[in-house]
Length: 192
Image (cartoon, rainbow, N blue to C red):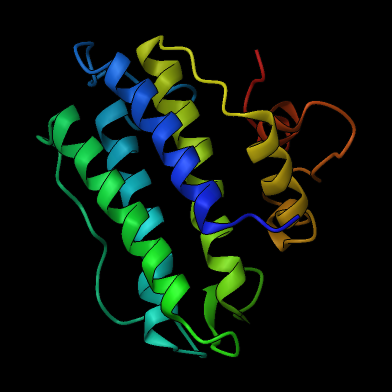
């Protein structure tokens, strides 16, 4: 039931299709309930898909790599953001596929620094991507409902991860109904 590189490819395609459908709309509007606008949120989504590739490739086990955030900047066009997302997704998939199964690297720092193997870096990027894709599409007024099987594998793969169990962050991840709704609700997003 692991969320795979092939799943990331499919999810990226679904996100790209939705963003292309809204490419002529105003990306300076707020992205859903976030403080960021759609351009800033899409730019962040590219970064959080690319970042796990850097983390795993670094093999650092005490902290994130010492280099900065990837950003296209506030004037990035929808076309540039879409191209960057497709590229970042391919890079993440390639880094994970090339990593030996015993490789370890920091995957997150909260509530404490934790290392994981390659199998967790794709779903880490995918979880950020699917939630921020939702934010962008909400802001643009573009429908976005990712495939049920992708959401179910992502939900199952990440159900024990700490972000779902921190009292000051997200809510516990339910496994009760529609996987997409469960992911949205647990991340504090409106499922409507």
